[in-house]
Image (cartoon, rainbow, N blue to C red; front, side, top):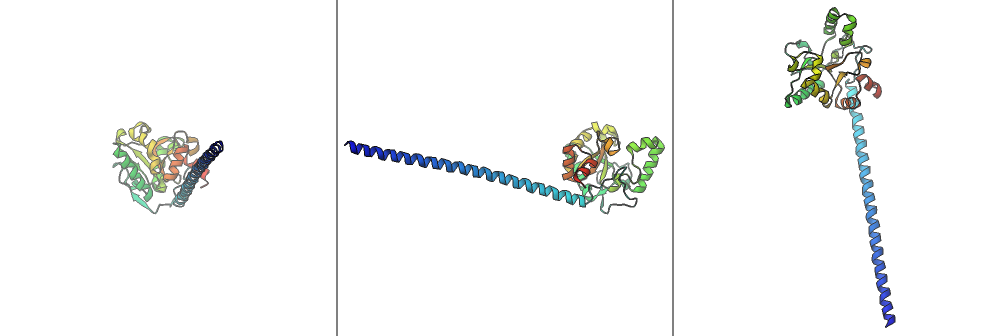
Length: 253
């Protein structure tokens, strides 16, 4: 009898050991599966990040080839006979300004219209006062400003002919009914000015002459003056709080 009891006991112990071993193996397999899943997710995330980075580089290369980073300032001049080939009329403008300046390059014009319409959907009024300017028109404007302010003062806010990015067809000056469609530093404190400062980059525009960038751009702060550079670059410039000069140098364009 005692022998039979011991036999049954050994069988029970062996069965119990088998169950425990099986449970341990199952647990290890589950852990390994979880680790494999985590590794797979991490790999997938890295692949997506690499794809996004490659897409961003491709977009910047395309935008550079399209001339969106053309740098025009007191050190980088534009030829007197340069006229963009794809100028398109602007739909939203101050009616009392020169009709010849109601144009931008096609891509910039399309995105400007999107910007104005998005602001309007929020009850905010934005119009263009001037965009494309020919070399000859800039010369007239420069001479007028010099006669009114003197050359030194005019050089802080106005560009000599050949030094104005308005000639690229990528720049636009804005205003709003809140300040009677004037180009004024008061624009900064209007609903339109605040909206533009926070949202222009979403449409590919930057504030070209920021408040803290005078030493770099060579011009005083102009909250109303936007420059189109494309959505990818605009997001970078806005996020890093850069001037166009700094961004072009950083990217090696």
